[in-house]
Image (cartoon, rainbow, N blue to C red; front, side):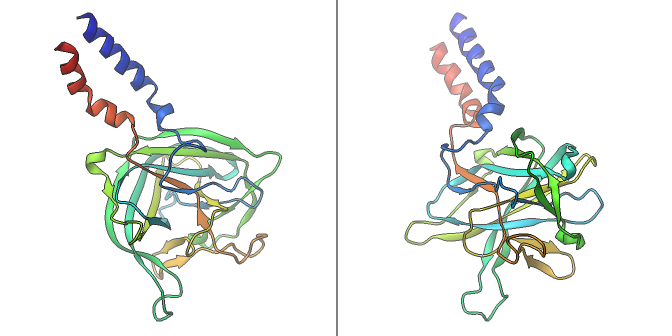
Amino acid sequence: MKKLTTVTTMVAVLLMAGTALADWDPGDPYKWLQLPDETSAGMDIRVDQNDGITRTLADDFLCTSTERITDVHLWGSWLNDQKGAITSIHLSIHADIPDPDGTGPLYSMPGQELWARDFTVFSERHWKDISPAYEWWWDPTADGQAIPDGDQNIWQYNILIDPSEAFEQQGTASAPVVYWLDVAVTTDGQGQFGWKTSQNHWNDDAVFWDDTAGWLELRYPDGHPQHPESIDMAFVITPEPMTMLALVAGLPLLLKRRRS
């Protein structure tokens, strides 16, 4: 009984530390990394749907090894730092529609949906306050004008994915595959949330969904110091780490070994 109590206590401690274990910090392992732009040129692009307008943003990434995606980490901010609460984060993985020879669209974009999930369980932590500087805010879906003093606080959102439900990438070093990560957010209706841009640029522009025109490329708008350069989004993808999901999944076996 004492051994069982010890194991139970250990698991309880690990569960209480679950949120901290879900965080991602610079220096932690990653499969794909685009860090948030923490300068005054950083921009948050609205991705919530509080006003009934469908907003989805997507950015591409390269897979060079076959692994499951079990962690996704995003950065974002709230307009005027009037923070609400995210109630659901929708993630989907898409195939790539490239434009290698100029005969297709003028830019690459998401193609066939390969995987999708809605997450209501995730962790949130305050990442950085850049005051006295401000970052930009933009809502391209509603054709809004970019706001230079949109927010000052950056937040990190960490999503753990059950390995049994995770998407398994099929790229290799000799035959890499381009995928797209699509993101949409539902909130409690308080405040407007935007996905943050990154200074790390790769391949083509990020895109946003327009109900009439389909996928449109994201470039910094008029007035921004980086206009009209390409926009990329801030996110981290990590493969099959030793997360709380793995620990909890292995609990029955651990208990069995302890009893024996």
